[in-house]
Length: 116
Image (cartoon, rainbow, N blue to C red; front, side, top):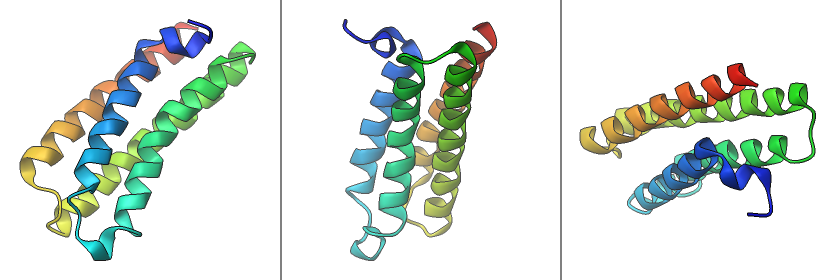
């Protein structure tokens, strides 16, 4: 692999979760396509993008800063999940599945951050 981030498990997991979010938002009603759907997708994508950006050619403090950004984006996804559930556009099963997956991802990103 050519880039450091491609070997990171947290990056790989964030890519998988972003794809799951993308599948979920395809079922959102049309009035949410440019509101909550775009917000949650951007946040999900941002997790992976910040991990990648921080890992390549950056100092350790800079990488830690970008890992912090990725955690913030993951928290934003969780908040969007709550909004979608409250608006009755995300069901309990999808909510729980993604909620716990992002909880796990956040813990893994924080563990990586603490280990470097």
